[in-house]
Image 1 (cartoon, rainbow, N blue to C red):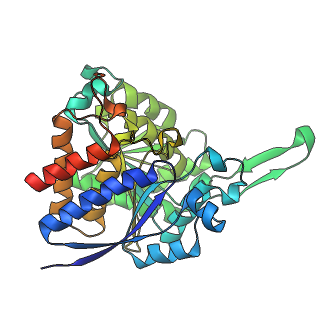
Image 2: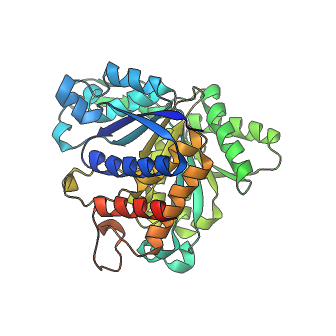
Image 3: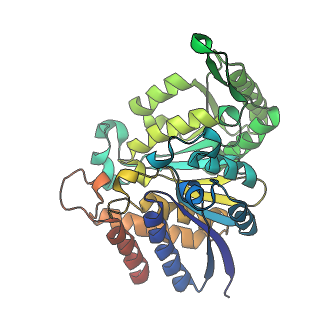
Length: 361
């Protein structure tokens, strides 16, 4: 039976259009193979939206994202817009979109493909060749959404950003993390800074209390500075890492390098509304935009997460993930994962290779 699935497509800035185009090719191939119909609707976000209509998250884009169950995003930002006031910079559009969609739970799988073990900066005896962990990051609260301001004059001029979390905000993302841990290795690590921050102490108190509902889950607490160190000393000790918005932002970028490149790290942002936002964890890389150099695999893997979490197309999601694995196993490399310094392929060639595997398997 054929079904229709509506997807908002926000290509954004820098390499965003290039990498999203490859993910769309892959989705078209999956649709043809499985007799599905994906309906794609494009809109502007970030710097592209600022240039066109003066704001980073236009009302037309917001309405479209709410009308579609899933949104596929490329990347936002670039030096072109760095001088703009914070409230209208491209990144503000991304924050506004997350808040509008209510996607408070960000899933960032950190999975090492065995042939890329040598691309990791860690020794093979530390990284192994089967690293697989998940960072669950709270996405719509904390310091990125807290009160902020500038006060005073001259040398007394000061800036402040407030980190604030409610019990409700902590509970809802912690429940997602506990449930996910139950589907994996039954191990959850809360990362905080409870020895210094009151907000972290609340996180610890709430998560410890919730752990009584999940007696089959091993709960560990770890300060963020230690967690950052442990990610490079012994990353395989982790399975699910639960943390706040700012800590998750930093740790997921650190963890991505364990896989050889941030260009391999997809993400899904979910909430209670039934809407989902899917994007690669990397930025817009304006220095290589338009040069057919960007690695599209994180975006393609984000499209797989879209199929799994928004449309419950688990078989089709697995098809994409397996196709990516086969392409990596075959030795095809974009420049960011080309540790052997052999020939590199471009963005389009990598996307075409994934499509080719899908068509022939």
